[in-house]
Length: 307
Length: 307
Image (cartoon, rainbow over all chains, first blue to last red; front, side, top):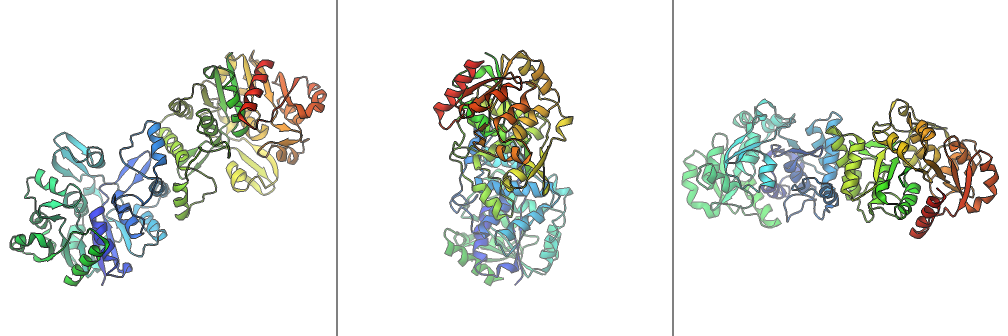
């Protein structure tokens, strides 16, 4: 089965780790959010792309969800001595990825080419694509002004109240080569359990991608990132609240209702089933709390069977 | 006593470590060779500048002579996995210096400004100046063609036979701000026991520096980098031989005889004294083999007393 997954970082990577045990990895194309990319000290840093890549390469740090397992932070410590802002935690091995990517992009390669290069050299059989080759940093409009994404997300720990998500540069960007083709050729598209505003939202904001989801013959399945009104990790629940939405999977389902065929609710949220169904979606229940490797595989198997 | 030192990397740093125990560090300006600078993966790397900086900051690795003591090599290992040439050994903490310098230069700072910034933040009281702010990589003409300096020096381990040293871009460069002023104001100038071709040679090739050495009222003292026909470390002896010169301190003294007042021979080379004196130089003997910290201080004290 040819499959596509739309992915953010940590939540998506858990589901993808399970999916790789259920589907042949070479049949899966993963389209990753790059709205969280940023540039620091001349380095081109793609946190979501790297989290997905490190996860599929078996390099990821399962405790933090980001970075490389067992990485050291010696370069960052010395950069701090030199007076640099070091609130974004970059390990030494992780830094190598950014040094490599930055240089390859300066040499004229696209982000998509470099991403493919890194993932092949990391032994990954799936295709990992950035949503776009353009640099399209998300901005967060907050009660303290408009903040660059990582400034809001890491430095300020999502504390300022969100008023809106700005994808200004995405509107002039196009999907990376292969993105529309993969969606068009897929039999299944998985919307990973990622933040709908800052992970899946930017992907859907790339001109042409939402349209491709409308047009594909693939069955499109979204897995809820919200369980019983709470996000497993990250600010999804807080953002729903700050955006004036009901803090539940229903709000996420509503954002996807124009293109999703099947919405996977957590079994703790069975009570929401009729309301999600009333959006015109098929709804199924599953245990979506992926707290160990087996539960990731179990969820992925169940979702694949639903398709 | 206001002093200036012309310095390469490892040999110079040994002498400078001693000098700092003898003179007030804030009275010393060190003018460092940058002909060995190179760019790799978008990083601006200055091996001699960093060896001097790390030495004076107490960070240097005394076993290798380069890099930071106890550094790890995790980023480099991963860059190797990604297919990069990694024959130049860059530790993780060392890498931070290059990331910082590269970014500051991209932001419009000069190499001299960044060097001063790094050395101040590393707690160094002396002034460290690059010989020039321009990027002036030395090339080595060999029997295998013309090689970039580090390509010859590190990758090829000085194996190709040297035919000439090319400072093509240096001819269009100027001394970094402060270089000529420091030489002019100095009471003593020390030519460190560095390689005369590839460490001191590029400094002397910067237009204006040799002239400033001719004109200064400072007493100029050179310490031999050759003891009993051998270099302590590095290719000085081999280069003298390949350039058709006598492999002895005499050949080094001859290269400096137009501007040096006093040449310090190793006491093992007392036999060379009359021949060096015949170049019109004062000559003194000292134990120049700096194999522990005390011997560095002893040599520096003796040389300062000679002045």
